[in-house]
Image 1 (cartoon, protein in one colour):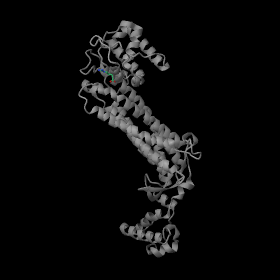
Image 2 (tube, rainbow, N blue to C red):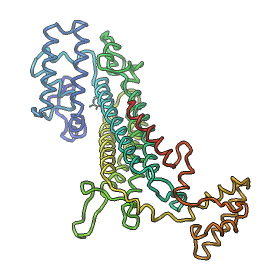
Image 3 (cartoon, rainbow, N blue to C red):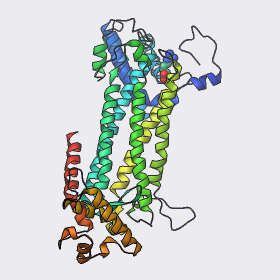
Image 4 (spheres, rainbow, N blue to C red):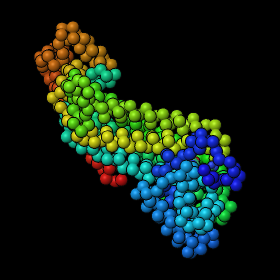
Length: 457
Ligand code: ARG
């Protein structure tokens, strides 16, 4: 291949050297951002007199053509195109000759690559934040349909307390709100400009780094050129932000998978989000949820890949850093896909209130009974023990709380006089009208909160 550095290394590389070195297959997606970086950089070179007015116009025109060609896929890459940066430089130079060959003046691929990559990440993070907010919106819509639908809430996967399905769905909205905050934070950390750092020591040309940053839409300049070309913290931040999104979706996907089992029968995914079996004609599988659960593994892996890749790299740039991209791109691509799929699958799923009610058992009202005794002034610990004793006795008799009538309740708990509390599931959830609680009124307040959150963005 015609090398960038043929003056120093005249011999062709071993084909395997090319293979291990070449990042074009995966960094080609940076092309629009490499063009943006080049537009800003060449404008700065023009201010310094490197390009005449006419030359700058020609360079900008050529860069525009390269961007257009890339969009329509109308160019062939050559084996000598090591990465996206050398590809763009070659295409511009082929058009403009010597003028094109000036574009690399005063810079290095070390500041260029990380400039492109930061621009790309900011763009993807904005998309991810938008998708996550859409998910919150969808969850709020589904919660509004099911603000009163009862569900057997569990802890330890054992019957705990009656809750509303709307409340359950909004628990993911609450986690996703934190995810959005992490995405925004990662975006802010990423949105700093490395351009002008050169290979590591700072450009030898007196470029105005503040203006470059502003032109490219960054919030500011990275303050140290060694750090600017060495830092991949933002990649780790992004991958770990993605990994929490993925973990959240994976947990809820797992829940949906067993809810879709006929033993529960709580939920059915629409045909668009279900798959069958090649052999078993009766099958209707929740593959979308299983893939979300499976893909979370890949996203988690990306954090390990990036941290491990970084831990031994001496300052400043070393080629190890080229390995940031596949893990980072995969984390972003996979997470975006997961969020979109989960959102759409939930939006079109059917929940079955009568099935959700089947696992409500009257022993789940034991806490309400103990609460009622505590309201009569009984120390809660004592109330807990009294109710536990009665529940055990009922269980031995093959009965439940619901089988006891008012008279029996008054006899077992004389503290109530002849006015024992009303024990039923609707009363149980209604009692939990505390902020953030499961009562329909609290669920509606949460819906208002999450809808406002989406609107404010
Ligand atoms: N393709 C390289 C990367 O992704 C660009 C930087 C190359 N720099 C160098 N000094 N060889 O990191």
